[in-house]
Length: 225
Image 1: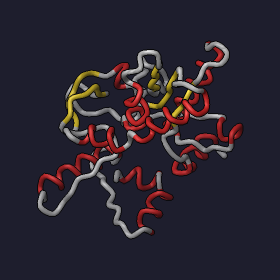
Image 2 (image 1 turned 45 degrees about the vertical axis):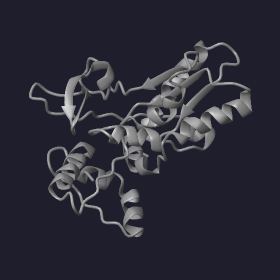
Image 3 (image 1 turned 120 degrees about the vertical axis):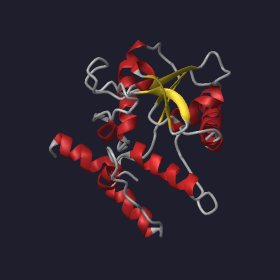
């Protein structure tokens, strides 16, 4: 785990250790998820007989993206079933934050062949797509290779990955009592802009990425609470 993330997600780290697992902080380069994955892969290929590599994002070499897609497919299947029970049909629109990819993949894959279902993946524009301070590789990235996979990346002229800086805020915690992950907050913000443009009765599903309590300290610092 990146050393910065160990500090930022102290609550999650405490829970992991409480359950008996070891957490090792990675201090190389930016000390974030990208570097933690690099170190995990490096250890894996060095100690293949004693190490099993597990990844929860749609990243890395085959078959990991496919495995994450298939193991998370229950989210999309449940969405289809619940939409049928609630509305008597499919959703009109699916919304999810892109992030590492698992959040969108787990929801979208089930509906890829349904041409009438509109799927919206939300990336983080940060201070603007032309500011250089965003996290939108699909919109503004270039083709590159990271962790054994070719994808769209935010990278410099030497192929090094650029770390985006962003913080988003959502009113959903006050309105719904749901403290969402910061990644999902970007999708919620887009949803606020999207809904006024839709016809009455539009059936919209937004997929939450996870709990936001891991981001409490970051949000509190940003809002000076």
